[in-house]
Length: 592
Image 1 (cartoon, helix red, strand yellow):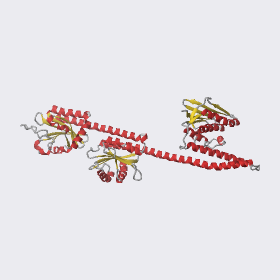
Image 2 (tube, one colour):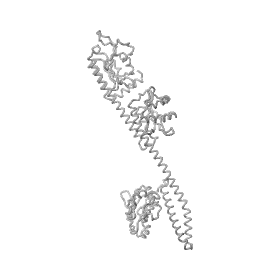
Image 3 (cartoon, helix red, strand yellow):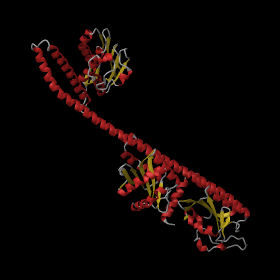
Image 4 (cartoon, one colour):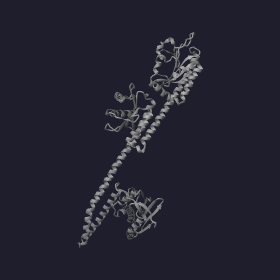
């Protein structure tokens, strides 16, 4: 037995050593030897095309059986010449040339007895253990009968019974090992998807980086390659060895992925690529020769090709590779790989959508920045000619104009003042919306600002016949922020309340502390705002659909400025209103 064969046998046994199956098999051979009367009994299972001894009982000098492994083909001469005894095959010494077996089934040579049914040292008795589909899964052999005679009919029946029990024990052990593999692959898949779905890894590049290790560990692969597909025949891709070393792939490999992956996804199949293995998908057969050639160039022996997708869309291609010393791909592994193709495909779909969303957000942010810059530039450009116009209108007002011209001069003055108000509001909105314009925070007494605003707006409220009340803490309430911006915030809310409250109404300004938050509340019993209008209330240039409110002049920028200033100060603004039932604006600002 070669060193590599011995290593593989040891690894195979190690995979079963922690299970109860091996103990059951050992008990089985000991029972056969003791109950039927044989000095030597062995039980081997078929692993990776080899017969690997899992249980042995007999003299210590034959304990090499514990570590022996042989290809399944050693049974061929026995099957060709042996007599069938149920599950067992008996090969009498006189029916074959001993050189055919090359010592595989000869435990010890000793003198033959004198009776006609004496056991010959070269006799072979081996039972074939198969699964429900008739595939060979193991072999039970016995030698050196205690009686020195070949088994009689009663002993054969007992042997058959024990072989049936051993067969079921081996089938159960294989099923258990398959379940263990499925659990391992499922865990690998969970780690894979968990890794791919982490917020800090929500990019296609991160998915390629963080799924490699769970894949190669979960499948015992020598390397992995994930290729994402695009319409141009390229796409992001990365191939690495088990240790993580990046492998450069040719354009032919990438092209092969683009041709093979959609066919596999359409058929919902994986493809094992190895010499001598027929493709399970006929549509992939024309590409198999090229795939084998690419594997050979990379020094690999076999690969498992898995399509990645979601719904009807094939998103990528996963390839797990193995070298000559690695075991072939099992049915459990191919089934688990296809499931990972679904799960990883879904993760890729999600990440791709997130990347598109981020790109869209970035593009919208750029557009918003451009809009702010454009508004600021136009506002600055408009301010100069408006200043000139305003100055000339003032000069005209000092002249003795024809009485017929005075109304026109007055109308132009009102229009100019309104335009200057729009330009000023646009400049302020552009400034407070600019992320490049940092907020310089200083301690600000919010009560003092509100008191000042109420004093300024008081004359306007009195002229309209309104009651303007201020409920402020004399000790003040300090927040951290920009004094000018907070003054504009309070001013816009109070001015709006006065503007949209009919004569005889009341406007109340309240400031109070709630824990570590300052609450500013501006309430009126005026026109109110419909639920439909409240949806877009804080958008720039928004105007209500209420005809009564539209009679009042405005730029549609006041509440947009309020919302932007509140956001810059890490606060929140809310509105509670009912058409015809008044409006209350509530602003919450942190005090620390």
